[in-house]
Length: 326
Image (cartoon, rainbow, N blue to C red; front, side):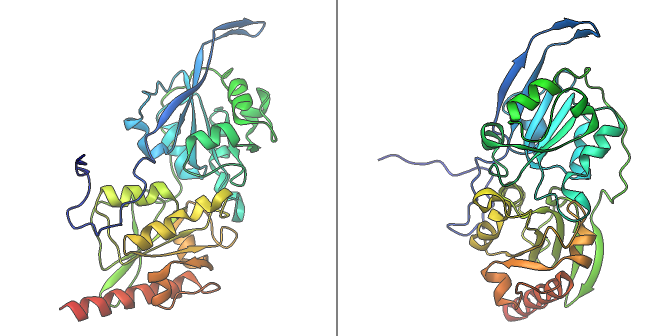
């Protein structure tokens, strides 16, 4: 009889059947390697395209990343905050997912931030590949947007990711930079009521406590790697409201709805066209719900509802549960 060792990272009180797909996250591989080339414009240093599921796992990547020479291809969105976190590490170039592009082009706002620093960056269509799956992004992704720095090197919409990455690796070596963010880099309290609070953040990776009475409005799509982080770090809020990221291929941009349902956590997604991706406050103030999981629906959350109302309903449901358990 074969015995399976328990997952040492699993919270002791995790309910049976509530484990998200933990393989998502730091899976990584080398997509391609370029050699040193001497051109009329000068020497181009060798480089690699490193492919990973989530930039959140940059430091834990199964393939060590050398930012100065490497271009990173990842399965998350290309909003401003994501790009800033990677530019601070000194990457040579970046390719991510456009998350449907969304209102105010916020799903690809990181391209302009990179461009201001002369760093090539591109986004692939969320409809061409499975979000959070680096291998799908690499093998199936089709470029939808490029910044001027990437375009100058020959990257363009319609290319496959390997072709764009090879061209972008003609960029100069990356360098660590101080990059200011115009959005809050810590969770912001947006509202209070019924024993809990509503918080806004650009990523659930900013949260370190269970927050069982609180609701989080997060700027990311409600995707797989978000749920993996929550599981591994014991984050168990009363509810999560994020973006639908355009749903994407195989609806992977909202895969977290079902995963959190199995974890017993209410979750809803708002239209990527109604609120700015990457901005938790916009998700809360501007978002219009497109999808809700079973726990959120039980609280009264429904498509077409404003996120402000949905958050209030989730707080109310958590308060009722707390009173019943008192």
